[in-house]
Image 1 (cartoon, helix red, strand yellow):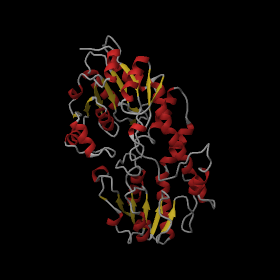
Image 2: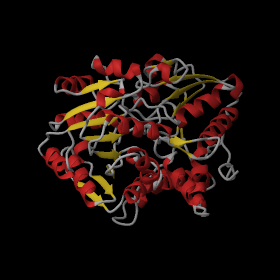
Image 3: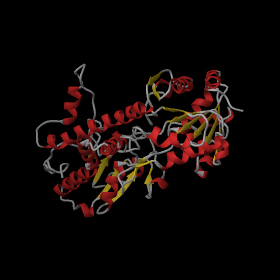
Image 4: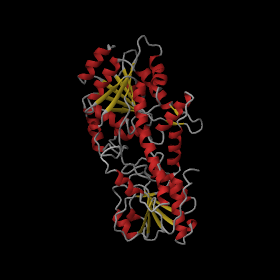
Length: 446
């Protein structure tokens, strides 16, 4: 049986629709559970058999989804599966699979989106459905990649919308309080998508095209990336001045307009900030354009792990310790605080570079060993902080007892400006000049 879009709109409004979520990762799983809690029948498909088995046993692998919340969703009718038939004949589909950049070709990796769209086309049958892309894609991808697949051989076009995810893993803003941008190229599709997502968030913001929604998402993360690059560049300048870059940022933030605080660190990680701006650069290349500013900002952030390693080795040498003989405890392996995600983690890049020469122990309470190809300790108390030549704080997890670190370690290189003010350890913050460090203003420019 097929329904008109008007029927679909009513069914979405009455919660009398079945929603299929393709991809049950850090975006798809929370979405599926939110739709379930809102009263929809929800089926989820993921090609990872291990993931699906864990879901069926209420064993969550997503930081912001507790086992209890997952069990509640299962009890309420959420049906995950590793066979595509689990999402057959749904009224609406949400595509939430990963994307990225191909390091060899410099092009966006859209293979997962293509495969997910093919699953939608095969499982939706002949009925008219709403298909929502929530994967982060380059501007134009919904029209160029998704639309041709779902519309092939159909009498009527599938109604497409683009609703970019805005999750903040480890953050303190609840899912339902984050407004969602809803883009579509037709009014009926836009209205249906708004109806669907109004069921799970307090506010939606419609825009006139899928391309505008895609541009919105890439703009948001590019904004963050370039501002982080700005303060990372200021690190090397601050080392040549008698100025504190961290204090300067906090002082600038007292201005009630025109300034937003971003802070230096060992680099940027995760799936969004290192990747999404490259979609814009690639897209500009298609039009013979050049977003040189974004390219340069990306290069600055990518070189921060090298800068951190250089500064630490220089300070060790200044203390009479050969970096090749040093014992180092690295606090943090995830890409950001309070999550276990190691994708593009600058902390791991620092640890791996140090490990080429020094003996490095990595501590992280959130990251599983299998995700890093190295054995991890769970807390600073398990590490030999007192015997280490250096402790480098790379991720300021709330679970780290930094007072204990400051009382136990001899020397701490704090790349997050997170150590408490009163410490027995000798603490040096990223950007600070000491007698054992030296200024290399050209390191990030190389």
